[in-house]
Amino acid sequence: MWRNDYDRLGLPEGTLRDGLEVVVAGGCEYFVGSAGASPRFNFRVRDLRPAGEGDLLLQLAALRKQFAAERLGDRQRALPRPVLPRRIGVVTAAGSAARADVLAGLARRAWRGEVVFAHVPVQGVKAAPLIAQALGDLAAIESVETIIVARGGGSLLDLWAFCDESLCRTVAMLRVPVITGIGHETDQTLIEEVAAVACSTPTHTAEAAIRVDLAAERSHLVSRTGRLVQAVREARSRRTAPLGAIARALAHHNEQHRRGLHQRLREVRASGQRSLTKRREVALDHATRLAAAQVRVVGSDLPRRLEANARFATTLDAHHPERVIERGYAVVRDRGGRLLTSAVAARASGRIKIRFSDDTVEAEVPNDG
Image 1 (spheres, rainbow, N blue to C red):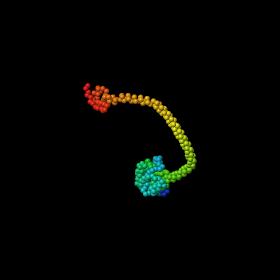
Image 2 (image 1 turned 90 degrees about the vertical axis):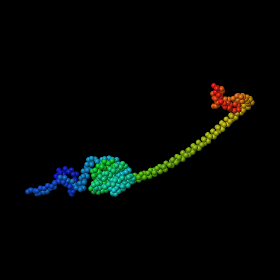
Image 3 (image 1 turned 60 degrees about the horizontal axis):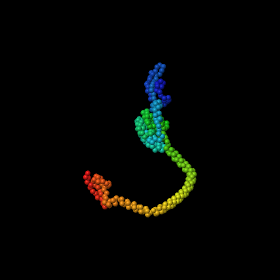
Image 4 (image 1 turned 60 degrees about the vertical axis):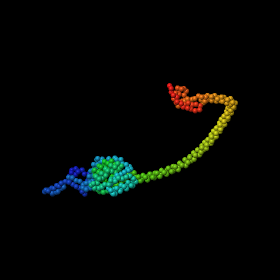
């Protein structure tokens, strides 16, 4: 292969090495020889690529270089990741060791949230599009806060589905942060270049998703609570004795004041009772003297007053309306009881009531005009 043809391929440094299996393209050249040169046969190589895993490594290197130039992984790494998500999506194979490793890791964290599984094949030609669809379905669930993609180890050919360009671009555009745990520590797939977090094994994905060791935090909280309770008891014990002494002194002081107030209350009540008794005695004495004086005055003038009262009673009786009626007069009223003092009023009323000394009669007065 001519040097200029090889340089045109742009292969990474160190791609070609002894023992590497390659696929080449070119053409045959044959020289029939001459008097001064032997005949020879050449295969002139114009294109070359490593075969098998070497070919895959070259494709992987080219895609990794392209993704780096596009900064495709920046979007996922910029997404906020919850410290303690309540619901996690997991993309893995059903019944796989990776699935068990993820669950075991979550259990060690003492996490009690919800896991939504998307079981898909993780190897083969159809694996990449099915994984991409599962990721999209999980991201469409609003409550899913983090997605884990997990698979056990294997050869580069076994893990090649996770180097698919379309799958990697799907991961880069998801709204949910993706945590990958593909293969073992030495394996490096392309999906890890664009994910938010790339873990060395499926077990470590649980620690990356649940960033708080709840079991350790609970133990720490119980320990701190116990110390706090003990400190409160000790503080209460130290402060109870002085407070008890203060309370007893205060109670004694209050009792002294209470006794003094009771004594003053009894004195006030006794003083008030004495004052009231004295006032009643003074008032009674004054009333007695006044009554005696009135009796003396009335007693001396009593016959004259009785005689005057008798004359006044006789005069009132003589002017009483009943005495007038007994002498032959009458009282005329209308039906409403109003007093009628003229014939005009009687005719206007029509029906009247006439009261005599012994009874009342009704009469009809014609209105003659």
